[in-house]
Amino acid sequence: MPKTIDVEKLSIVHYPHPVLRKACQPVEQFDDQLRRLAARMLELMHLGRGVGLAAPQVGLTWRLFVCSHTGEPGDDLVLVNPELFDLTGVGEREEGCLSLPGVSVPVRRASSVRIQACDLEGNPFEREGTDLAARVWQHEHDHLDGRLIVDYMSEASKIINRRILKQLQADYENGQKKSA
Image (cartoon, rainbow, N blue to C red):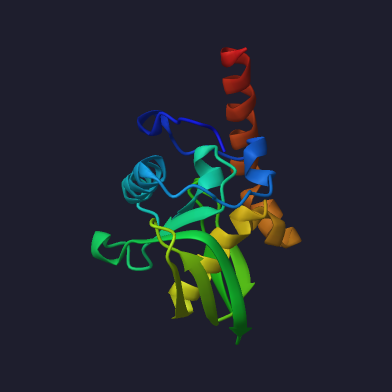
């Protein structure tokens, strides 16, 4: 993990940024920098009107995500080094992603899941989530392994989202040329 990060400069990275495809490394330091990072991620999540945000979505390959299945700050949750288990049931629902603005994909996921993680102090905890909470945890956990909702696209979804994905690709390439 980098020594210092200017968390105020962090922003949401968009597809097809390569960091979104990287497997993340476990967090080993539970310090003020981690707390500032989590606070900034929650801020960005709420500004984007999202219900979850993973570290790769702000350009970091750390096993960390934040979420609020209701979208309300009172329900904010920070999960460090999360692991999913006891995935049961199944349901399909449209999902969007802050790193893929405008893209919507039907995704089949478990309808109930348990998650183990650490809080910002390094204390382990466990929760059970159903329905939207379970879906959010699985979506964000996918980010930590380099998986995106585009990986779940059917041929029909690819056609429906083709124009948006091409625009995201062009925007990314134009941004790369500007920074070069």
